Image (cartoon, rainbow, N blue to C red):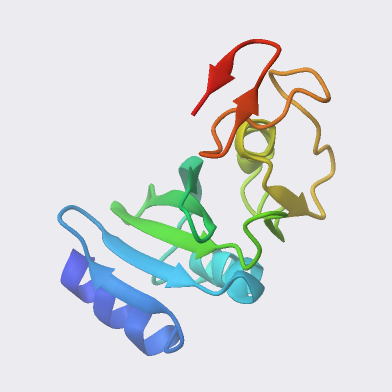
Length: 151
């Protein structure tokens, strides 16, 4: 499926999503309440078959946190970007997709550890790199007086 065909398919199946054709991939932004259902459909639908989560990363914006998923269909050979924004920047939380793509388990732990995004229903959400109480060093408002780190 070409990017144009993928965009047309997604526009038809996900009318409430914001779908654009980026410079390299089709990008889709969904509401946090729709994330889990959307991800399940993207993986299970024979037209998309996004069976591989390439990477998952978090981004800190002044108004919200965003989680970005790069998805690939190994069999159909197409790639897309799925994005979801948190509704609460101070206490960001979205549903886990680790039950859909097992590789998300550690990606989500990394985003939790460095940005503080809580993944609802994650089976093992704990710090991956840093000690408890460290704070979230990739947040733009991070200040650590003890270690003399400021943003």
